[in-house]
Length: 496
Image (cartoon, rainbow, N blue to C red; front, side, top):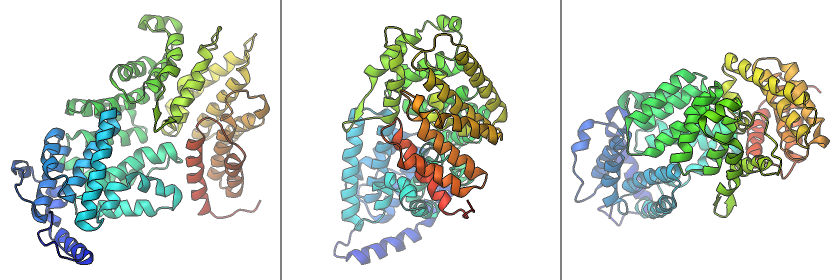
């Protein structure tokens, strides 16, 4: 067993654990991840001090891109030591999330169950919140205010082995969850501060380089981000899935800048190499190619119509349920399956909004202006159509919503309001893309919040929440609505 003295009460064991962890501060803080630990052999017996030393070494190996060595060190004691169990299961769950391979997912589930049993047996659940409820903690921001984040911050500021796990979870929250599921208000100052000590100690660590690049993306520094993602790719060859994450980000960096051929290159790499979501990758590739002139597409050897036709057959289910973004892509792609295919209007920009990309590109006025020009050109082309299809009203509303987003980020708020309002007043004309109305109401709410009219903001956002059901990406909008309403509750009331 992990503890040599087995007759301690649960309370006594926890007190002892607290005391011994405090004694071990120096070996657990990031500045004390000593390279010498890499020479420590796998222990033949295990006590608390040995467990802390060995798991610290394993984390050191992991952050230095030596993933297999880290797993080899943790595996022998993963069912006997809660620290080994925690580290081993966390790494395998991360791997499963990146590969999306069935066998990796099953392995991740299995080792996490084993880890929970080990933690429960060894410390009556101490540190369980870090291992077992990472997703729950991420979502608590929407359910219980900031309580979940405070727990993670407490863990990140500690000098225990859970610090790096809390840091990685907070980085995931600030750089992805807050943006995609919230209002795009992840705390980048905090994210950079959390990353800094690990960046100094592990400057070539792929995980560290990846988050450095991601933060640069969110700050609108696409040029720096591209360099750091390339550094991340070059830093290791063992986990190709980290390369795929970089390809995804590089695809978006080039999309934000409308470097369509480069964006296509990375979308194509994802289609060929990654199994995470073939439907999304093929849709993205087709959508990006749709932004290019026909003669350029011909030179690539691709057939846009055929690519869109493939999307529906590539969708998958997890636990019997479809993935919302895949369902969205499938619905959009169906226009190409008709006897007379009807082209999507600026499909790459429509998908950019799904991932909250306008919040990112909005940090750069130059690229936002360029996107606005592209959208206005599409608007002119739509208005000049002599034989409009049944999709014409939907396409017009999509253009207005995307145009409104650009205008908002450029500070032209009255014009943005007119664009969003045009969508909401066209509700009865929309035949397929019913999501456009609740999303536009939500955007109007954010616009009024930005101008200080909090009552009006709440009214429009509540309208989107209460009066619309069954549209594409509904769950994603509800996460954003929840985050927006939470932030509004702390705002001063205004006179109607």
